[in-house]
Length: 64
Image 1: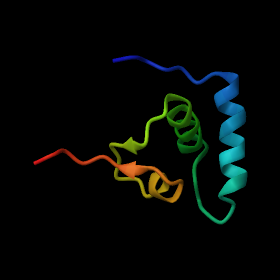
Image 2 (image 1 turned 30 degrees about the horizontal axis):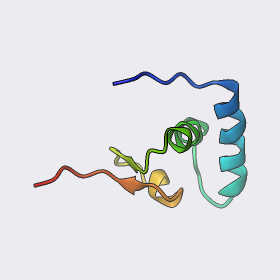
Image 3 (image 1 turned 45 degrees about the horizontal axis):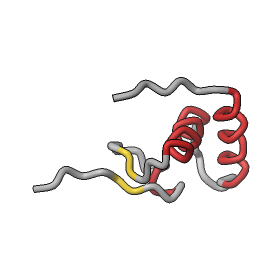
């Protein structure tokens, strides 16, 4: 497991995400998460938040 701290590049990319989804009520926090996920090439999130689906990420579900 690795801890990823939001860098200036993530914060700039978060603003791009917010501009890309102007009709959605996406939080800045989620936009930073999108930026980090994008850099890390993470396609799925363990979340109940619909914003991740709107942004094009998948919802992670455990395999049965």
